[in-house]
Image 1 (cartoon, helix red, strand yellow):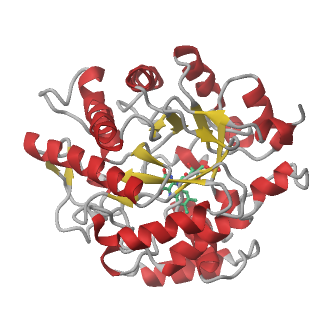
Image 2 (cartoon, helix red, strand yellow; image 1 turned 60 degrees about the horizontal axis):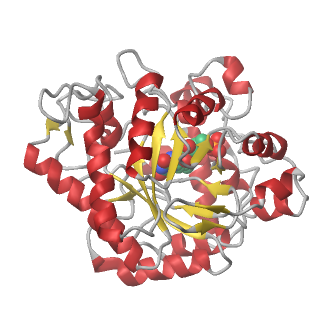
Length: 399
Ligand SMILES: Cc1cc2nc3c(=O)[nH]c(=O)nc-3n(C[C@H](O)[C@H](O)[C@H](O)COP(=O)(O)O)c2cc1C
């Protein structure tokens, strides 16, 4: 089989759901909801476009499970059925050409900027970045169970709205990832200490969701291969957690890496050789495959169809995750299948001004700007001026 044929093969998940092909649009936060976290017409329009992409799975940007804990000011919030109609429209728009829409569900923990009233985390370890984040209050036992229940509720609403799967955001330094790391989790109770205790939060969320959505609905998780920080979640620990999650019956394990402090997920702060090679976490996924047969999805840096197909052919992974290139070319999966393109590209986000480019948010700001264009029914502009994007971003975030 050639690369487009390999990437087009369908794949059954443990729950029984079959995914039409191996290309997944990984989560990119839309940060474009209406007041109160209601999914906006712009978000629905964006997914109508991505629904024509040909991707097997479209994973939404992170949806917040509590209005009291937002990662960004305009996140979608799903606590209950208040936005059921809009969520149904979102699912219909995204799924009418055969893609499966999955909801990524998140709680930011300490990575909740100051506009949130209160910030909570496993322990009181503050995120030391630009004075943007308050010192978190350690969660009480009862609150931990409430959040677990909240994740489950959000998953149930997604199912009721016709979404075809959910993903727990367990990566990038957010709450689930804070529980996993000894840098942010200093607890001495059943939620801290050993890796079994630190993984308990993720596993209890999975169990709660499973009890609500039933045995034949896909549940996945995005997890870090490592946090890439001293004293934080390591590769060895990640492999142990992946095995534990797989043993529970997790349908899809997406591997990424890094936190706000070390944005390895975008290839930043990694060794130069790793940045230049495709698929930043390619070495890790081989180790993950050695510990589990659970379906694996790898995201971060995939750019050529030959490398994507080879990894699947070698059975190192089952799905390739692509994020930024989907904000530049929304139709890329079909173009790959038709043999029209052999390469996908992220945007050139550098302004050329060193201090801005070093700050590390241009990747997010520039690709979000193109997603917003698509939400307004316009085509993405691969030549969008990074400097203009920066100035607009700085103005909007001046507070
Ligand atoms: C604008 C933007 C928003 C993102 N939002 C999320 C998110 O909500 N959840 C998440 O897990 N990852 C998020 N990511 C990370 C991507 O899912 C992905 O891991 C990363 O971009 C690397 O993949 P790529 O090289 O194919 O872009 C975001 C990335 C970008 C550029």
